[in-house]
Length: 152
Image (cartoon, helix red, strand yellow):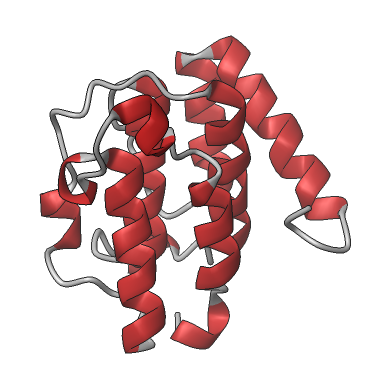
């Protein structure tokens, strides 16, 4: 995948909607916030014109226990999945899409869900582990996939 294949600005907008803001959090420490880290990674990818963040997946904040808004997270994850190239065997942990997805799913579910590089397999896995959330995510993804534009 090349940097031309993703639209980091659209992803950033979707992730921005998940941010609880300084009013809710009190301070903004992007390095310790799942959403802030996803924003930083997307900014890095856009600035450096790259799709890889070396060792980026190792720095995802594991101790962020904020409760985020489910609807915004589902919207953002569906946008991330739309831009995923379903790399299959070429899937990389340090791909900006993968890192953003991992941040968002951890914010939503409190854990990571295995991703093999296949969007379909991922959606099936989410639906099996979290039936309600999984069905919402599948519906959103399918809706957005049919729509002429991905972010409204």
